[in-house]
Image 1 (cartoon, rainbow, N blue to C red):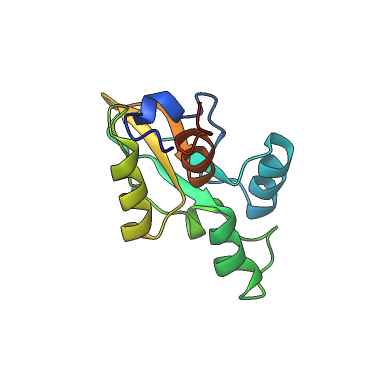
Image 2 (image 1 turned 90 degrees about the vertical axis):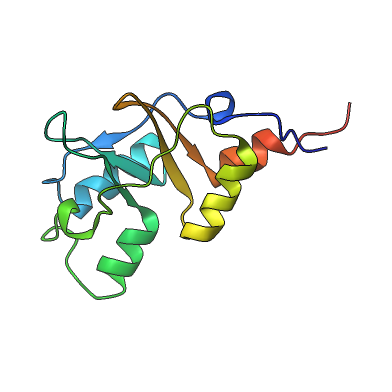
Length: 133
């Protein structure tokens, strides 16, 4: 049975890994490994700056597949900015549709300009699809 009544705030991870955009891809990959995540949120420079995101997919497509040196490539060269963000109140069915339509697997949860959490495809699958009770 699927729990379609859930919202982003019900399934999001509240501890979100972040990084500065001037870090190298090697530093980002190491941070992802240490924190056990597949994406990092790029910290905004100021209140008006949008959030960015860098994912495993970005590293594979924009660095490794092109034979670039991860020690010489910076996060700002491969990140997506502005990141697509969602409200904590967005229903999981619409998050799933967003993932499909935008071809993404992670989305920051933002409210009033503040990062509240992160929802991934894994969160959708593990939290929305529940065993019957």
